[in-house]
Length: 275
Image 1 (cartoon, rainbow, N blue to C red):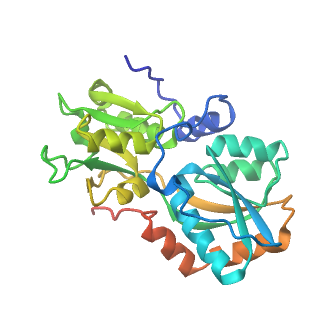
Image 2: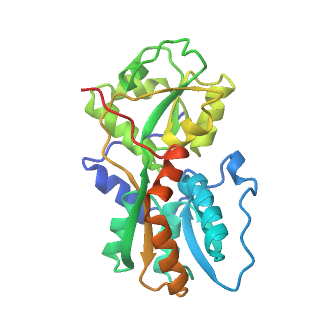
């Protein structure tokens, strides 16, 4: 039996409470690892280093950007990966670090704690649908996931932003009961949901766009057809950055078309909307 939480009237309140008021791990923590977590990125051995607290969902783009930054500047990059809510708590407690790379709404939360110097936007994440190759059940949009008998997977809405956004969306569409009756998995990570579809345990999964991109050769992607609130990927300079010069150099490097193109190449882009 799947445990579900009732919808909160305000989506921002839901996300804020999940980030700051829960002692539970984010849905991306202690989950099935993805291929990009197998040590492709190699920190440069350098006497100049920048430390980045990076949310798990930003890892593919972050590692690609860091590898290019190291090659072009000779400055080493050290990552501290984790759930974005856990990382912001560690930053607030004074954990060493220079930059923080989450998605919305965490930059605003950081600012409210007077820990944000400034930020740059690197890309966007939004929920997309993934299905078996050829889309055998002809799923065309989020509304279709209320169709009786479908096996649907999403990330656990108690901890995962995408799960919360999805539940809020189906509530606004008036299909929450039918949708939730079809939910066969509330995964610990987006990768767990994708594997569920890939292995035939699920008919459709709702995942972040970068996961859909990661599996584009194995699964088909279907736009949700829903106008989700914009969720940006933000690189934040911390007010207490110890390696200030190196952190400023990374911020300058990231605030470029080259960096945003790199994130787009890893799937961190908004889908075009139907008029």
